[in-house]
Image (cartoon, rainbow, N blue to C red; front, side, top):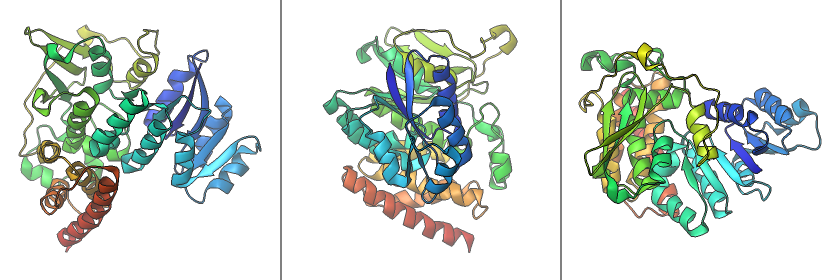
Length: 384
C-alpha cells in the first residue's frame, strides 16, 4: 500500500489522479490533499477518500474546518502547510499537481524528507532541475514526471541505455494559433488563447501551450529528468495530439507513444510502473483518426520556444528568470494589461537584463524574486 499526498487536488491533475487512485484502492491510500481556494471541492474530496489532513490557502482554514465538520482531520493552511504535507512521515509519495513556482519548495521538502515525488509541476524542473535531481539521487528516491509526453518517455527509457538514443522528439499541438499570421497574433484575446484545440487545462498552462512556452519547459524538464543533452531534444508540431513522444535510436529506428488525449493514462503509468493495468481511458481508434501530420515550429511566431533553449544554455539562474517573468507576463495578458505577443517580449527583456548567477536554491529564489519585480516593470512600460 502506497500512502500519498496530493498537492493541488482540485486542479485537472489532482482530480485525474484521484480518479486513477479510486480504481486501485488496494494499491494506494490518500493521506492528505491540498487546494488553494476551492475549499468546498477539497472538503468533498477529503470526505470521499477519508484523508487525515488537508491544506488550504491562507486565511481559509476556518472555512475548511466548518465544511469538514470532522475534528479528526487536521487542517493546515498556506505555504507552511504545503511543506508540512510534503514532509509528512505518514506519506510515501507526494504527487505535485500545483501550478507555477509555488510547487518548487514542496518538491524540495518532499525529496529532502526521503519521499518519492511524481510531479506535473513543470516549473520545479525548469527552475531547479539540477538541484532537485541531485537531491533525489542523494536520498535514493524516485522523481517521476506526470506528463502526457514525458511520462511515456520516462517509462520507455527505464529499460534503455541513453547511449542507444540518438534524440527524443516532443510533439506540440501548436495550440489555437498554429496557422495564424503574426499580425493576427498581435490582436489575440485571452478568450481566444484559452481555447485549446485538444486539451482541457488550467488557464496558466493553456496560455503556455498557446505560446509554446510549455513545450520549451518540457525540453528543459527532459534534459534534467533523463540526463539527455539539449542538442538531442527536438520539438515538432503535431496537430492531432495523438503521438505524445518519439525516441530515435542510433540504428535509425524510431518509436512513438500514441494514445487518446487523457491525462489519466500517464498518471497511471507513473504511479504503477513497471506494471501494466487496465485503465479507464478510451481505446485509441487509428482508423477514426485517419491522418497524422507534423510540422516544424515557427520560431518567429512562437519565440518563447527559443527563449527556453536560450535560458537552459545560459544555465545558472537564467531558467528561474525565464519562469518567473513568464508567470508575470501570462498573468498580465489574462488581465488584458499586455498583448499576446508581449508575453515573449517581457520574458526576453527580463532575460537580457539579468546577470546570470549560481543556480543553487538561494540563488534561484533570489533570481525568482528579482525577475518578478523586473517583469512587473516591463509590463508597466508596455502598458503606458
